Image (cartoon, rainbow, N blue to C red; front, top):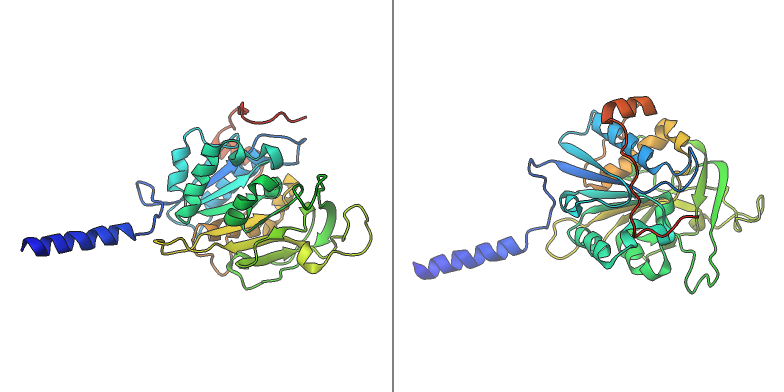
Length: 315
């Protein structure tokens, strides 16, 4: 009898040890954490706080999303990082380069790595795709790719971006993120010639007018693979987890006014939901444009910004 009890105990220990490290809020909700960086550009550009507040309202109102909680974090990093432990996905809409909030300390890097290891979703938007070469390991493992501007390839920093108005193409239209998204014509600032991992990346958006040299326009066009400006990354499954983590990188969203485009919004909302391992409906995540006044009425006024002492100065 004692031997049988010990055997059952041993089996339970093994079962417990191989359970996936899934996030769970106390009430069992899926949780989306939207992180806004500190402001660095003029009005209408890089509106991180306004964007994540808008996304929260749209996600909260989405008729097909049930049992999902959204959390907005300001100033680039949560005051209580434990909120990330119950996230099903983490979205960074922040500055990049030396102002990339997760890179400020080894402790912050370890905190995100912990979430990646348990299969948490991860998404980086626009400037946050500019990851310094010294963090290439994280850029590859967490996102599947990043906008490279320094390191051996670029002894002198070189920024491959272009502001232009273009149709966008969908190289993989059957991917769940593309559900219900119709091609659109948009003016934006596109970063391109992304450095990707060898496998696991699915191209989602290509901008066919991007030139081979951003300083020569109009001119010869970039290779189609270098015109990819949004991608999905199915990360390798970590031993002990049922599901592999999902990541998305999107290099545009410079102009806040673009959120008024229905298909533009749907593309981002679908991507956030997909990274959280929530099924994207065939028609995509539907939304209606919400202006600033309505966002403020819904969420209350945005708090005054508090810049971290860890953040390098912005000239």
